[in-house]
Image (cartoon, rainbow, N blue to C red; front, side, top):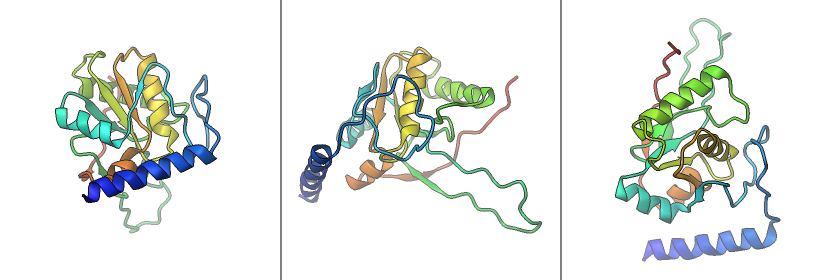
Amino acid sequence: MRLVGVGIALALLTWSRLALAQPVPEPDDYRMELYRAPVPVTLSGGTVVGPEEAHALWQEGDVAFIDVMPRAPKPANLPKGTIWRDKPRQSIPGAIWLPNVGYGEIAEITATYFQRGLDKASGGDPSRPVLFFCLEDCWMSWNAAKRAIEWGYTDVYWLPEGTDGWRLWDLPLEAVQPEEFSPPD
């Protein structure tokens, strides 16, 4: 019963947000700044899903979930003895976390990291379904999904609400660690 109430509240919130807000046009290229801002409701070449649809895909187990939430690097100039603790990331269970791959422009080394992560998530099969997410109103996931489509992935899903929407539906989250980075050969 609680889930129905949450669903109704989410539908009303989404409807009122869409009714009041001007739709965000899908850009021709990547978003290059202001990554936490309203996002489009479309992704050319991909499929946009909400938390309920994403949960059904997650339960089926055939879609690789890819979290692209950025992660701040440890500052190089910290005073000696300073303890650095990375901010923990709560993500969709079973997702692979590829931080920092959703920027509009990425370095070659980051592109290689992203490609290796996609290869691992898809088992090397660009036709395997992949779903990208971050947080609500985060362009990082839109950029990453767009890039995967441009790289030849043919079954790409995008969850614009990210883990915020997932959490709102009271769906499970778990602590994740970023995929290990291995320098190019």
